[in-house]
Image 1: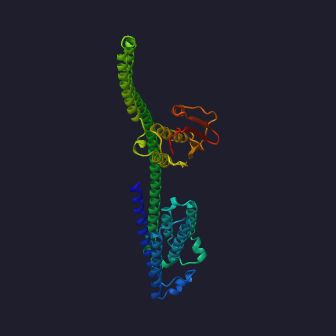
Image 2 (image 1 turned 120 degrees about the vertical axis):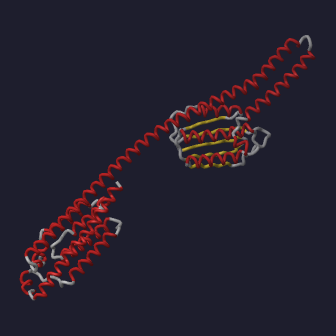
Image 3 (image 1 turned 30 degrees about the vertical axis):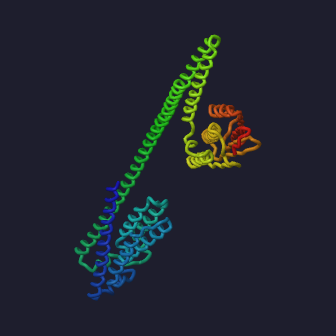
Length: 438
């Protein structure tokens, strides 16, 4: 495509140079012929044979050169907008017609040069066919002596009558050859422009095809990535279950086995050796306490990392802000008292309720606005999370809601869900009597 564009630009420059030499040669030829009539004193006879008085001989080459410079300057202008493009094209047509007039319309190929310049920008305007038609009509009028008949100019043939017959025939033949060469060059330029446009369209088609293939590859890669992510999640869940099973086996299993064995021994000794039973029960109690310590250590490993590093209020602020930034969801959060004085179980369930409610609102409810409200009333902590999502007709508690309900029941709390203009989760946690929690 680049090579075709370079070739068309080279042909256009050749067309520029060719037209310059043609118009200057014809201008000088007309000027010399008129000067010859003047020198020989036959100007009166010449004027009787023409329909209009020509320009002064010395003015013709200079004026032709001046208008050609104007045309070159117009070719260099890079206009923006269709209106400026029309104005520039109109000025080019006027400059070309002025050159044709100075040459007594003996050469109109300069208008093909104007058309070639317009063809360079035809792809950027929707009025291309109108412009082609206008310039084509002007060229036909100028080339087939329709305009000369209206403006009454002196023809080149009359000027060349100054020369003898063989020279006159040679000059007219050279003029015709140059006109044909200009026409052939113009046709070659148009063909290169057409090939350039075809190549450009083929390139666009190829790019679209590549883009389509790339999109298909990306879709396939995304599908594989989703499958990999799901498989990774399943593997992580399996590893976590296995780890929890090992923890239970290594801690609770060992502890409960020791307790059962000790109690069996107590049952056998309770009648025969009461003192020994007391000692054995003390040992069993110590084993149970150590087992409880191991269980607490295992449960602590499941505690959210944010709650290990910071206070509950700061952990909630950070979690909500991260969710707001990552999902672009409008989240409003309010709490009427500072969240202080809770034990680890209570902090974790508060954190998990808000986390799970936001996740459900965004993932299942497709919500873009979430309101979180935490308030204390009469020794009862109430957490309300509402959204403007799609909601659901029948509220069925899935794993997340069921898990929240189980956690709350451990603290004698309650969970209530409703779906009206979105979805609302309301959790109530009783504050223990005699303990200042907030």
